[in-house]
Length: 542
Image (cartoon, rainbow, N blue to C red; front, side):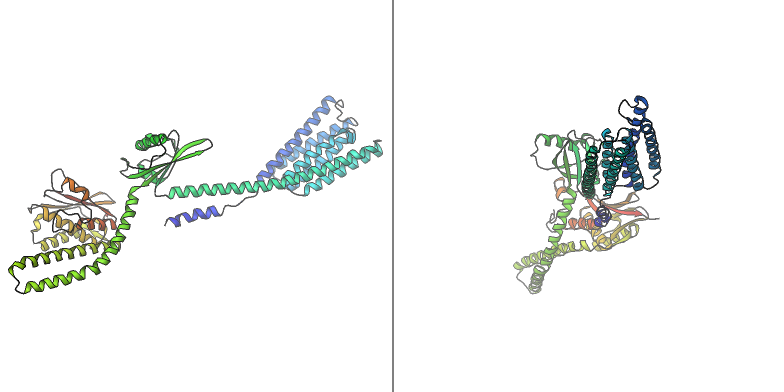
């Protein structure tokens, strides 16, 4: 069932792939590039309007320089509005901005004296930005346009302004620089895309691993806590809450001292001696037992420990299943190897008994018959363990079933029905295998009859409901009760206080209860007598 629950989460993990840079990231890049253009144009307007041609800006034609700078600012403002509106499309806006830079910077360079003003170097920034933003070969096209613009401007200056022909070398070198910067920007952009893709993939892998760890920890049957060096719980799973009997707040920040003082003490001892092994602790809040172990966690900026709470009840349940499987194989061998020889011995002894044996042998024959009968009962009781895994639960009305069972027990044991006193709430229903229920009640009622004082009301059957989902059945008697020293071994197989008993009755009764989701326990009474309680899931009928 857990696999079905986790499969959608795993499908989500597997579906995570690298996602290319979003349009929003591209628009943000072109926004900052245009912001640079706006600042550059504003600076040219301010410098030319304040200092004139004293800074060599507009040395050839100050009016042209100022007007072009002002137009450049207007284009930058228009581009800023277009970026906010996301219209027209991104590629067109980038081409428009770079084309505007080529035209305006070339005119500003011409107004400032041509190639010797060095303003053409500003196009290197525009080409580099275009290469990094566009991440395509179109940057080389922009470099070609810039080179043509520089060469045309210098040719016009040579023809109309009597500029030096020797400065063609400078224009050519600047054109080479344009192509070099464009190619470097294109190469860097390609590596940036590859690095970004790799980083994004690593991020996805890390997120997948974190999600997988979270699913594994949340689905673990054992409790897991992550605490820092101060004992503050940083992470936890539902099993830890169940074992500790403490509901952790979502905000976190709870210390071990507050939620589990015993665990806080073990953590303090472990910090002093990390070689200590695991210890079994019982938590009072939940009543559960757990084997506690610590594992140090050290990484940059964090020191703490991983606390494992291994549920002892689950371990005991697994050991119980292994034991039952072994007993199942044992019963098959017993049935084949022991029962047939017992039948032969019993039959032969009965034949000897029917003859006229020597009076001295009469007692020996009786001993043989009694012990073969006892061994046969042991075999039958052990074989009942195989019925545990074949439970077929059905809805039982206790106010109908219990009076019938008590009547059958009284008839079989030849006792007065008044010995039993029934106190049953109306409409109490439980889910239980009918055959298992009969066997458990016959065993408990038989024990109560054997040890009670045989008076009216000596054996009491009481049914009560703690809430709408729990029903309790108590079978008590007015006998001497169970000795305090015998209580720990009461439900162990083959433990008995009677020479004629097999010691399997209570053990089988408890196993059958557990097979049906119920729990059989012994309750010590202060007024004397024995009391066995069955707590099973049930419901109150309408």
